[in-house]
Image 1: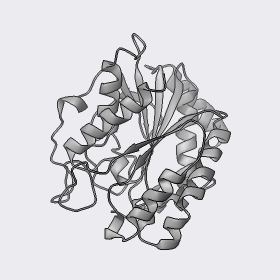
Image 2: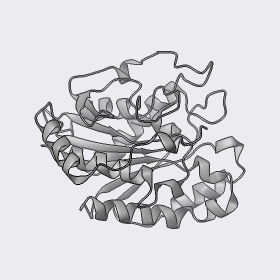
Image 3: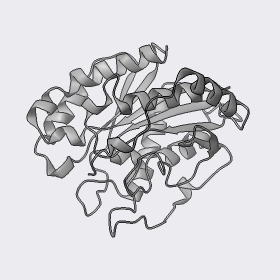
Image 4: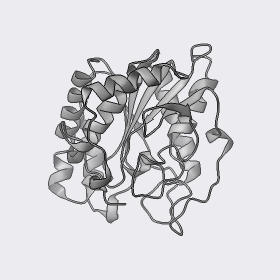
Length: 268
């Protein structure tokens, strides 16, 4: 997995700029159901992007653009979402297909989805980041919360946070052991800072370890040990892995997107 490229990330916007951005966003096409996508590279998407330092450009039907699926751009504007969803957000890395687009497609196809719904995706993931880099006050955390606040200032509501992270924490035993406590603190902080005490969080159980770290099983155990209300668990273990032994393939991401949609729909 890639280094975090932290020096390239923008800091949180000042409050006046934040409010101005919110007005700009609300005047454009706006979603009705908004989802935060955060974590590291398997959330950012490396499907089709693990060979030759480029994305192969293959877009499955489940990831095709749709006027009912929008993304919050790096400049805080709603635009029609398309692969790679994290382009311009997961900075410094080659991005490909992730779970966000197939999640939106599966949700919109479901009879449980509100009629006429427009899904808004807020890509926030950054490759190579351990969970400590997402603690309250960090650049990654501030960027995510800023983007979520702008997105929530319009007509839509933030429906859930989709979280796929932990591979970087499988490299050191002390990080693996601390994972559950750090994840619980992260969720509590996000809920407090977004003023959403019951925000649904769907956590994805990791299937690989960064740099073939040997504490994969321990991180997975810690992920399952997280005890918070309104937190769901979806397991990526068993999905196809690319030749780099780290990232999910395009078809694996399509399957994961459907699994995430099923988990969300089950809460309705």
